[in-house]
Amino acid sequence: MATLTHLECTKCGNKVSAKEPQTVCPVDGGSLYARYDFGPYIGKLNPQDFSSRTGSMWRYREVLPEVDPVSLGEGQTPMIPMRENPNVFIKDEGLNPTGSFKARGLSAAVTMCRAYGVKKIAIPSAGNAASALAAYAAAAGIEAHIFMPKDVPEANRVECIAYGAKVNLIDGLISDCAKIVNERKKDEGWFDISSLKEPFRVEGKKTMGYELADQLGWRLPDAIFYPTGGGVGLIGMWKAFDEMQELGWIGAQRPKMIAVQSAGCAPVVKAWEEGKSAVAMWPNAATLASGLRVPKPYGDYLILDVLKKSHGTALAVSDEEVVEAVHHWARVEGIFAAPEGAASLVAYRKLLASEFLAAHDSVVLFNTGSGLKYLDVLDPVWAAPRSVEPAKAEPAAKLAARHIGGIIGPY
Ligand SMILES: [Zn+2]
Image (tube, rainbow, N blue to C red; front, side, top):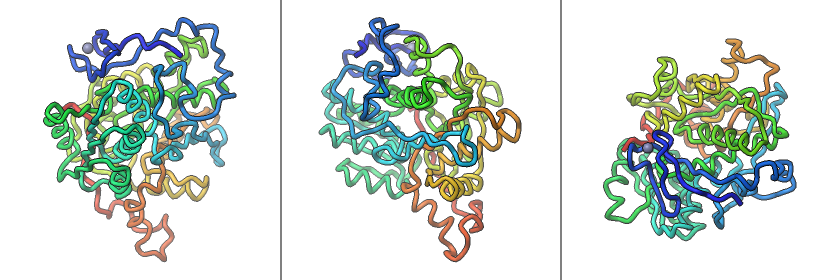
């Protein structure tokens, strides 16, 4: 296993000890990255060896902290070539424990909490991260305190209760949830596990980068479409590619990284189009893709940097397009995607039409979760009236928008 040597600020390069639980850089609040000594593996560890290993994302143990993992079988999700274009793969993260990609980050972060002896964890969440935290905290024997808006998808609320978490439904934005956690964490003894305010959710999410390279024979695709709320996976995969190059497994070539957002909450797209290096808070976030309701991601500077370095782009899609794409993937590919995931199909079509990409380009589209977690969101779209063909049902524009915004910092 690699030795976790220290944590490093992504803004100022400040080095912080990894021997105790850390949140953000004490100097400037920058997100901290885990750094390892890969020396013993360079030129010695053959990535092909991974293919004989079974199990979870922890099969990439040489690039993860050396600790006993809290695992529920996360990762190792299928990479399915699309029937419509076999150069395009759907990375189906809906098959993770708790039905979303959040399992990876929270497996890693809860693992480290247990290793550090943390007894209580708190999370402000838009939904799926709360479900994942609740499950991993249960598996670790750690108390989980959930703060989420009262209008989260039903599955998230029920799951958290089922896993025995202490659920607080807040009448307000998730930014209000984050404020409550921030105000109470010291007195309550909670460790704040918000995205990019602790170093190890990125480590879990980075396994998506290792895994897709592994599944493509250690070759990276031409482009990766990533539904971007907090953007931890996009950032994490980029970190993984740098590590893979350091280990000698790949060269300097990188995929174009494409951030996909909702037209009702597109702060990264706006900042990208304006050439900014940080995003402005998006007012009145409104989209049925609840995971994309993040008006100001804490790692905005990292997301925008990855888009720039990869020669990628950011684009927004409408709820109507997303609903059609959920139905299309289910009907044509047999994959019932989360709305956030289906957004990547819409974005791919747009970039194909604009000739940003060509049909022969190899592409990975991330489906971030299972459509089964959004039944109460999608049912009103398709079920009324039930006799109507779903794709021809009431347009999403007429639906009540789920206006509560998800936010990850800066609180
Ligand atoms: Zn710093």
